[in-house]
Length: 608
Image (cartoon, rainbow, N blue to C red; front, side, top):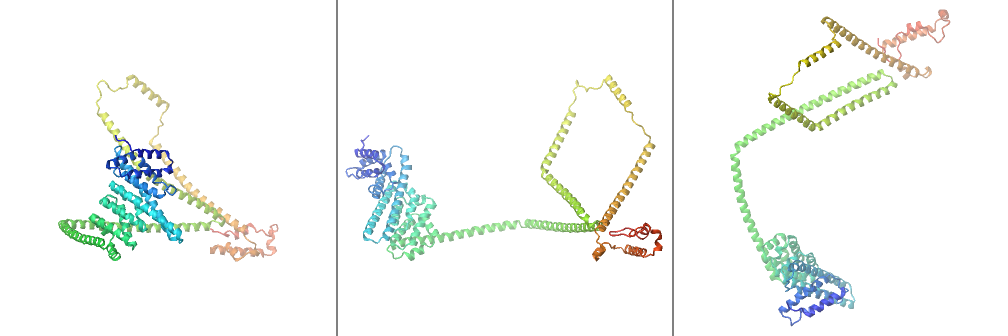
């Protein structure tokens, strides 16, 4: 094993012993070691292996993420470290754990370099904006110098990236799919945009098939940005770089050329109108020729495909027509059958609909008739019952109505629960049927089973039979049965029928008498309330008189006659009243009242 370079050992020792912010400046010593002219090819590979073995390349990788505005040497140190990292990784042959180097270390190096490029691009754009705003000559010169330094550092970092993926071709796909690269490419600054398009051109030059290896979203993003730069700017430098890239992409693969013609249909017009005569007509004409050629070939291919499709469709339609003609008789039969079935179904539907409408109308008429009878019955009851008893009657009717509603609701709820429990009821009935069938089957099996000759059925012995007969005789003696002849039973039956008929007749008479008593009691209560609430004669009005007037003409006539008789009795001379000395003045004799007021009825009705 060859000895380790003492310069590498010295740098590793100083880095291990120094502070973190001094590490970037110490790592710059590796540039002198790598650029030493006395090193040959093998010595250079040995130095790179030593640097990787002592983790100096990993230090270079990690310090790229630092903020170099406070580090000695500034962002130029970061650019030099990026260059050192790329040179250390290219041409390095890793013997111990090469998989980690290729799958983890190199992608991390690309990520950190692109991240550093984004920071330098952002600071360069900020310096350009501040340079536009400042007008002082001294400050302008300082800003211009700072801007040039940032641009030079950005160029150095991009060169390091190109050197790195030039030595490791598999990194080109990782560079294109990296978000930092797409963000670096999407910029409006001319200088950095030209540099990034040159990086993209280097990627395509190193690995021309990388655009087919990346995902569709990344490919569309790159092409969208190139076409956008052609459409959004008039700078010939940007147009030249974007045109060269599109020409390189179109020359590489017909698939990408087809994508350009189909995805960007106005690209040919844009290139011919906006970029003709800008100094790169040769590349522009080549790109336009490729696009027009692809369009014409695409049209021819589309025409050929259309003709093939027409032939296939004609053959298919002919096959379908012949097949349909073969099945035409059967189809007509099926159509007629389905038409008749549909017509019959419609007829049944119309009949059912008419029946439903007739039933609905009949139910509505019955409901109206029942409501009319109910209202007539209510009016008749209101004419019989006094006004003070109306509230009580209405309360009773409300209670009856509530009971009826509750009864119907309970019935509906019971039917609904029954329908819900129908499945369980079916299961229960099925279980009962199965059990019954099983019991019958077992009973048949038992009946078919022959009895063993040594197991005779046990019968009663003579002693047991005599004891059982004695018990039956004793029970009959204690409980003798009453004997009755047929004539006596018929007579008893006739007596029971007569008593039952008398009871039913008496119950009907009692019911009628009770109804009459209730009606008379209501009439008496009405008359009493009318008389109690009657006003005095001085305060009587026509409305009050209407209460005491009867609607029956005979009753009104009889009442008038009785009133005239009472007036006539009051006007009699004294000698006609000699027999009534002891009768009070305001009291009328009972005979006169019975004679004159026998048929007088005040308020309500009277039945004759």
